[in-house]
Amino acid sequence: MDTTFFCRYFGVLVLMDSNSNNVISHYFVRTEKDIYYKLALNRLREKGYIIQSITCDGRRGLMKDLGADVD
Image (cartoon, rainbow, N blue to C red; front, side):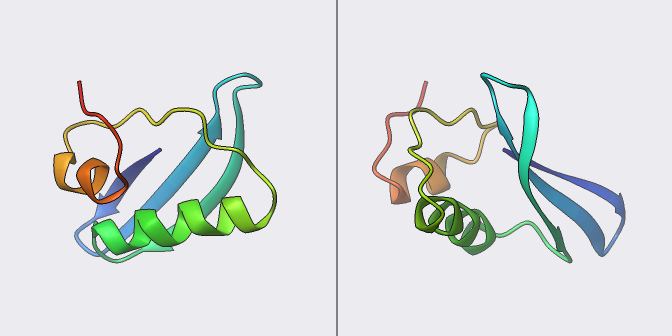
């Protein structure tokens, strides 16, 4: 999961399935906040996805909030 910004207030949060390399969810966002990641993960869980691991690029606060180990 990652967010890419194309200008100051326009970004896309993308969640991918690492097994199939398919995008399974995306959201347009104005800022990069932990709450958007939490909401996206909760929506995936509601759809029946089982999250086995998360790859992040330095958002340690988010990973701690989710109760995950950070390497």
